[in-house]
Length: 133
Image 1: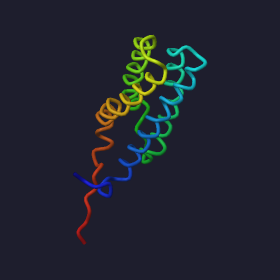
Image 2: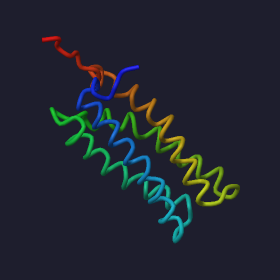
Image 3: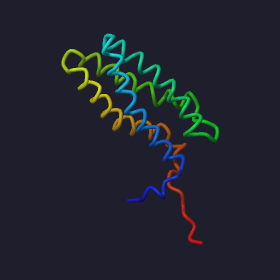
Image 4: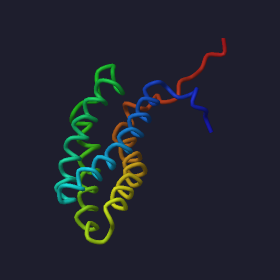
């Protein structure tokens, strides 16, 4: 197992933004869904959060030229559709906080794996080689 010091700054920024958006997205969904129907709240939050996240990825994570909108959409659209499907099928079964927690947990696991796959070329150098001298 490698230590955090062996991770490239770009990969650390990728992980940091993932953590921030994994917490803030479901939290925002929960608060918006208190006043709107859950499916509409989920749609609004997905659009808003992914718009902000795309800008963050292009300016902060992949600051040396950006990841590209097409690459971002390839990573984001399936996750958003999955989240909308969860809300659609489970909104009457689970309480709102349970639904937000489930979205957060699945985004943290499946979203991370899917994003890592989509950005594998951009993140292929996540471990830097340290010089011995």
